[in-house]
Length: 134
Image: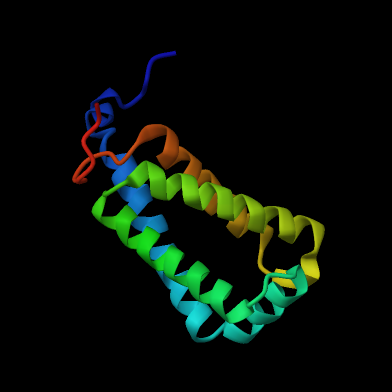
């Protein structure tokens, strides 16, 4: 079947741009939430998971999300940041599936950002990025 809007294929490099800016903003917000509004919940979650010292691990995880989100927005090391987010979001997705009382987030949310991160890992940064495809 023919594509009903073949002219839009000229803009296909904009799709990764839109995805990486969106997921970058989401991860920056999630990182800041770990320092502010959701800090106590995440400390309890890390304690339950046996990650000690919890303050250190929570700070590292929050900074990873903030820095990784910024890298995605500017398009620098996009696939490395996306791989990191695929791994960590996959772990969060598994935890949410197996132990729903720990994180208490919507599983669809984790699945969505996991899928967007995986897409960026496979497609690269797209337009308006510092990364240059080889």
